[in-house]
Image (cartoon, rainbow, N blue to C red; front, side, top):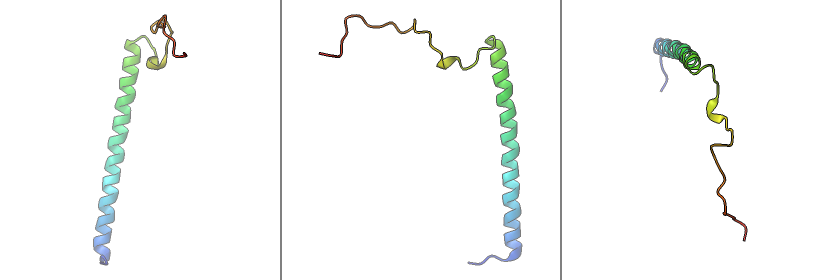
Length: 69
């Protein structure tokens, strides 16, 4: 069950390499997402978080409907 020092050192080095690769890829992804967001905002006229805004006119009330009897 015990690993030799050389095997553990290789395993640690591999783990460090994998974590570094994940870090590099996530940094690239973050840059691309920022660029995409900036591009889409400039195309939409700078509107931000539009999906959570409501003006109330797009959801009219149903007349003649009552839930209390």
